[in-house]
Amino acid sequence: MTSRREFLTYAATGAAVMAGASKALAQTAGTDDALHEIPPNPDKRYTPVRTLNGWTLPYRLIDGVKEFHLVAEEVEHEFAPGSVAKCWGYNGSTPGPTLEAVEGDRVRILVTNRLPEHTTIHWHGLILPSGMDGVGGLSQPQIGPGETFVYEFTLKQHGTHMYHPHADEMVQLAVGMMGMFIIHPKMPSVPRVDRDYCFITHNWALHPGTYRPDPAVMQEFDLWTFNSKVFPAIEPLVARTGERVRIRIGNLSMWNHPIHLHGVQFQVTGSDGGRWPQSQWRSEVTEVVAVGQARDVEFVAVPGDWALHCHMSHHTMNAMGHDVPNTLGVDQSGIGEELQALLPGFMPMGQNGMAEHQDHTDAGHKGPPNTLAMMTGKGPHGNIEMGGMFTVVKVRDDIKPGDFGDPGWYEAPPRTIAARISTDPDFGNPVRRK
Ligand SMILES: [Cu+2]
Image (cartoon, rainbow, N blue to C red; front, side, top):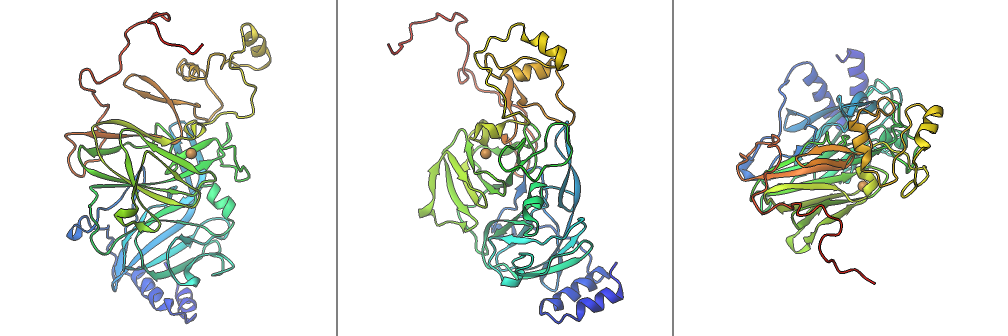
């Protein structure tokens, strides 16, 4: 509850925004306590987004202003079963909840800081007054531990945006403080999308056996995530055959991510600059989402299970050492026993490639505590051997509108699936270069 003294301090600052803020305080006293979710299909202008493994923050409507309340706080976060960490996020999650509104809306965003150090929120890409831009020390004082600040502005654009601290930024981003801010266009935009997914890419240095991401690491990360989850814990993107699907991708990590989708040529249709005119759309199968950028891709769904992943192959791995000798092609026979005497649990690997890693994991070989196997995930035909930034777009003919449930694995029609025809290495007469 807000004390009378805090209220008077608040009200006495005299800034224009405070008129709204005092209404916000009145609201906490109970004048309007209804929580609203962004309504689906108002005049069919837009489709609410679905945040992979995440959620959208409800708002209160106060005198026509949409009021959101973010709380910056420590959260216990699971990257996938077997790896939990102390992260920082908003309202109990990393990434924080998606903020979703419509171009032209006036929004008020309360930010309460429950972290042990100060913070701010920068509204990445939004057109707003300089003092609302959230750069601690430049555009506003820092939000101290225990304090609540209020931001208020009118949304003058539409598109895929993000929010994140602009205070001790290296640390606060490294431990998970970020979220998406989706603004739908005021006027209907055609063609209308039937399913609108969003996620934010990130990287984490959660060293094997530890529980708190290391902010000092610049390149050699252990975990690569979509919405702070790694495969196989990333939800599938589900659609019905023929539906128009949009995927909005933001990047607040330390690397660029070439995001690749199988099965279709997608159109790159937008960014933080909103949905582009159709004359600017382009066909791609991989789109680089650079650090600090957002990209929207759209496609018409075709039936199947289609991989969606970052094409940096190290970004589809979980925890692994990068500074190890290359054992590919090295005869390691006899070495295992000798090394096990020195390093209990050591297992020689990599002579014939790294795919055996997942077999070793399946056989019960345990790595360090709280540490995910390097490659993992099972499909209907065996090990998928992927971790990190990988998930599956699952398209079926019989998915109901609004059903996002996992339909299981795709059953390929007869004669549309690759099949074994020989086990003889000398089979056939392939042409080889001399
Ligand atoms: Cu990547």
